[in-house]
Length: 208
Image 1 (cartoon, rainbow, N blue to C red):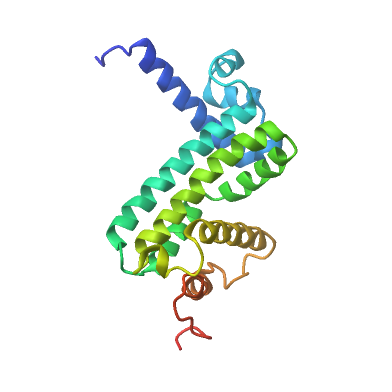
Image 2: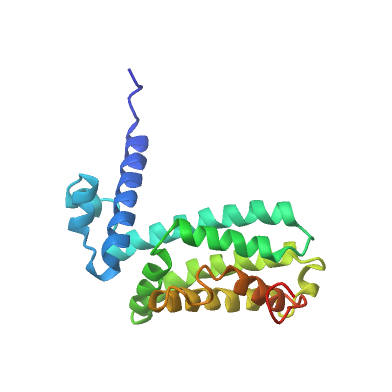
C-alpha cells in the first residue's frame, strides 16, 4: 500500500496533473481556442479545482512557460558545461533543434501567446520577465562555449541571444508555411549561420 500523500503533496500532484492537461489542450487547440473547462475535463477535475490554483488561462499558460524555460535552461547548462571554451556552437544548435522537434507546436503556441500579451500591458510585462530569463540563459551558453568568452562574440552576449531567438522564431514560422524552407530540418543552414553568427568562418556552400 502506497503511503498517503500530505495535503501539500496532493496539491503539488494535482497542480502537475492540471499543467500536463493544459499543455495537451493548448498544443492541440492553440491558446485562443483552449478554455479552462476543456483543461479541467482533460485533467479529470472540476473547473473550481483549476481556479483554486490558477487565476486565469493566462496564469496557467505562464506557469507552463516558466517550467519550459527552466527545463531548457537545465539542458543548456549541462551542454555548456561539456562544451565550455570549445567554440562548438554547432552542438548548441543541434540541441536547440532536438528540443524543437521534441515539442512540436510549442514555438507556434508561444508566438500566439506573445501576440495576445502584446495587447495587454500587464500580461506583456509578465511574459517579458519570463522571456528575459530565456534570453539570459542563451547568452550564458554563448559566452561559456565561446573560446574567448564574451570577447570572442561579435555582439554583446545578450544582444546575440535576442537576435538568435528572433531568427529561430522566424524560421519556425517560415517552416509552417513551407516545411522545406531552410532545407527541411534547417540544420546545415543553421550551422553555417551559426558560424557566422558567433564570429567563426562561414563557408559559402555546405562541404566547402
